[in-house]
Image 1 (cartoon, rainbow, N blue to C red):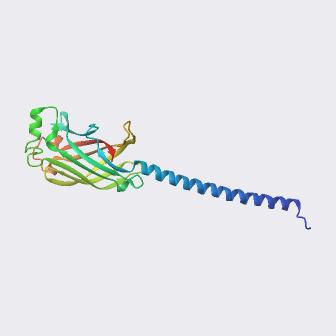
Image 2 (cartoon, one colour):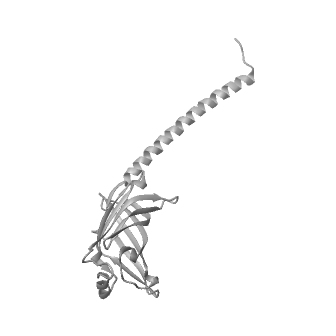
Amino acid sequence: MIRLPFFLSCNARESGTYEIRELIMKKVLLASAVSMALVGAVHADEHSGTYAFDTKGAHQFVTFKISHLGYSWLYGRFNDFDGEFVYDAENPENSTVNVTIDTSSVDSNHAERDKHLRSEDFLYVDEFPQATFKSKRVVLDEEGEADIIGDLTLRGVTKEVTLDAEMLGHGEDPWGGYRMGFEAETELRLKDFGIPMDLGKASETVEIIISVEGIRQ
C-alpha cells in the first residue's frame, strides 16, 4: 500500500471537506432563494387586487386649496365621489385608478360661495355634473413613491395631469376585510379647464389633495 505524505493527506482531506461544505452552502442558498421568492409571491398576492373606495365609511376625501386674492387660503372639498383602484404588488407600474366626482357636492363651508362655485363662473355643474380621472400609467421613483399619470376631465375639458401619490398602508381590518390607503396631490390651472373667473395672479392655480381608503373586493 502506498502511503501519502502526512501533509498531502491532510490537504486532500481538507480539500474534500471544503468541497462538501461548498456544496452544502450552495444548496442552502438555493433553498433560501426559492423560499424567499415563494414568500414574496405569497405576500404580493396578499395585497394585490381591486379596491373599492370606502364610500360607506367615508374614509375618503377630495379637498382643494386656493389663494383668495393672495391674502388668505380658501379650503374646500367635494363630498360625493366614488372610484376604485387595482393594485398589482408584483408590478406596481401596472396598477390603475378611476375616480368620479359629483361636482355639485362642492363644499367650502359657505352656502353663498358654494352657489357661486357651482355656477358658470366656475364648475358649471348644470352643464358638467361630473369630473373624472382615469389613469394611463404609473411611474415609480427610487423611494417607492409614484407618479400617476392620467386624464382628468373637468368642466368638459380633458387634460393629462400627474398625481404625486404615496401608499399610506394596507392590512386586515377588524371586520374581516382587507384595506389599502393612498394619498395623492396635484396642481391645476383654472384656465386650462375653461374656468373663466379671474381672481388675480395669486389665484390662477388650485391644489388638489386626494386621500382614499379602499376595501378589497
